[in-house]
Image (cartoon, rainbow, N blue to C red; front, side, top):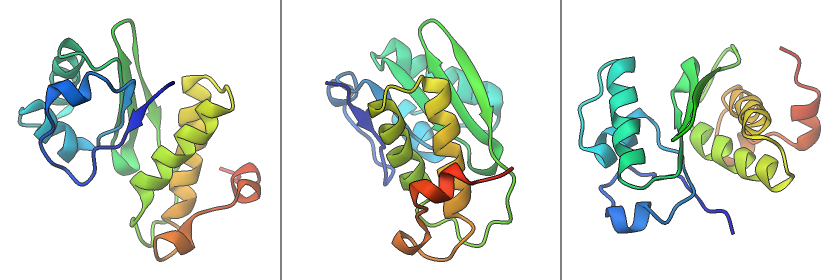
Length: 146
């Protein structure tokens, strides 16, 4: 099995739990709490993600809102830009991103393809008000033109 943990809402988690997770998907605030490191810039994010990897996390995707997302494991890291849209309500953006990531990975997409799919879902979800009511259909995602 492949496990994904979106550590929201942000609370301190024991490393015994975290090290059993395959993919951790914190936002910047959650990463700061989990790593116990102050995050003020990109260098701080890098240091905090490296600390999480050293503590046993296999893979991380740090969601950075309108800036995009950052993937890191022991061998590589890369940044994925967010799709630029007019955000109306960011409620459920992180949840929709992680859900879409899980869908794409369960359909044998690469991590890069999965992050792109999740970024589209996140972008579409912030273009409407509400949580569940803002979630796009697969057809919406497939017809999303940037």
